[in-house]
View 1 (cartoon, rainbow, N blue to C red):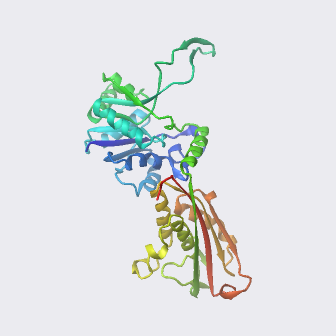
View 2: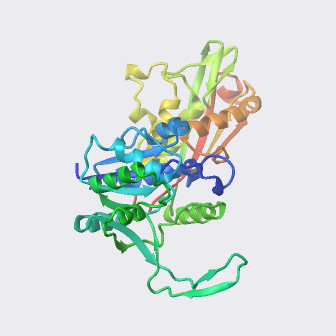
View 3: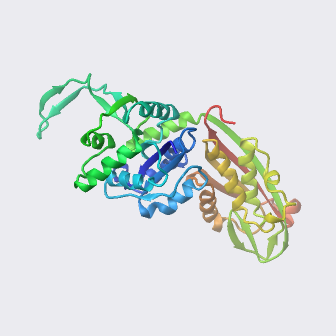
Length: 391
């Protein structure tokens, strides 16, 4: 193995505000950590990706990385960033990569060109890190806030990740620091310098922002929206007839009813319409093409499988589901009492925020087959955002 990436996501991210750790919060409908993992799983020269996470975040990590190639089983992080990196390096010993790129999960916009530069730099040097010139005026102040010195900024650089190293040398430096009780290094370049290595820099990226505060997430959301500027819309429609039974499944929720819906799967008319809407937005056929009724493996299947598949096609293209809305048309059962449970289940299946899902209902005013309570119909509209040039 030549190149491995080590993605560090072992912190709590408390400065980013209340809620989940920042690496699990959503940007453009996708967890920050998934954005950062994809930087490397999508890169042609990266052979393996090792994430370092908090043990309590393992279920979230498994869910967000399940379909990503190259990802190794996650390593448990330590009390400090240094300890987390060390743990990740030890997890890579069996793989024995020649080089390792260490990246903070809180930098989801690093870009493939920056990774290219990191790879080129470390092939020439034992240790190389991305850096950008400091453009602000820098001053040194005392404890009271009084300016005591002006700092010449021409020689100053702001350091970023991914930082690139020869694997055995970085591992050796970490082991030496651990043996000597040194745990105060805030980045691997400083640790390598302490161990006696010469660290060089290469051109960083101004878009490679680090998410630390709530304001950073506002900026990141705006940036992601500008990158996902290809907005597309798809529609879906489905209908199922009633048959003998004691419940219906709508929007992924089982609802007691005097009859059931007839269908090859669980006949969830709402999820079927939503699946077609998403697939239609990317021109990828319909539910029958991907899950033909003639295939017995889908008999009685949970329709969540279909909707999840459609949502994964959007993520595979680097896009997001901006909004998904469905309308149920039926005389009974009453949808209102179950609406919020349906929204929550649909959001869970698609991996999007609850606010991006709408569920509505109407009757057919006693008209037609719906008015005669012979079946239920559903319509859906999906709005998705893709990177420019996605297919």
